[in-house]
Structure formats: C-alpha cells, structure tokens
Image (tube, rainbow, N blue to C red; front, side, top):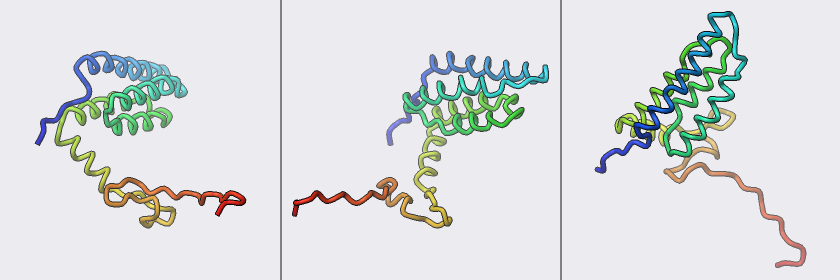
Length: 142
C-alpha cells in the first residue's frame, strides 16, 4: 500500500487560512453592528477557494458544503467557512478520512426523480451513464 500524499502543502495552509479568518472576522464584526454582508464576502470567497482547491486536486466537499451554509442569512456570521477549511485540511492530511470520502462517493448512488436507482446511477465503477440522443440519419446514406 502506498503512502498517502497530501495535496495541500504547508504554504497553502499558511496563506489561505488568514483569508478565511479575515472573511469570517469581517462577517462577525458586521453582525455585531446589526448588519449583514448580503453575500458579498461569500461571492468573493466561494469561487476563489473552490477553483483553487479543485485545480489543486483536493477533495473540496467540506469547503463546498460550508460555503453553501454561509449563504443562509445571519447564519453566515458564524465562522462556518473557516471550520469547513479546517475540515478540508484534515481530510487532505488524513489517509483514513480521504479513503472514507472516496469510498462514500462510490457507495452512494444517485437517485432518479421517483427515488429509485435510475439510469443516472453509477454502475460498477464505470461512472454515471448518460442518456444520449439518437444520431440523425443523413438523407441518401444507407
């Protein structure tokens, strides 16, 4: 079994953590003054962090969920995104957590609209099956 190699290095963690702390700190200060940032902080932080983490190859599920929770008005004053960032670091650093996330992704099967495993479900590790439209036949071809 090969050794787990984290994708986030120490420099990433040192430079990105203050970004989260500053954004959440501004949100908390605004909350104590009875204000809301009206998703401005989220609009700046959410795409930047998701693009960076996805391009780095990091499983950014915890960060994605925490950023979506930040969209709830006044619940965004809590340091949810910083907690999500810490969970993302833990998932990247821990071989056990990374393996668990990958296993859960393979086990969970998407459901169709009726709640049953449908055509969009994953099959035997081959990925989702995508229905395709029939190819139009050209006039005069046999």
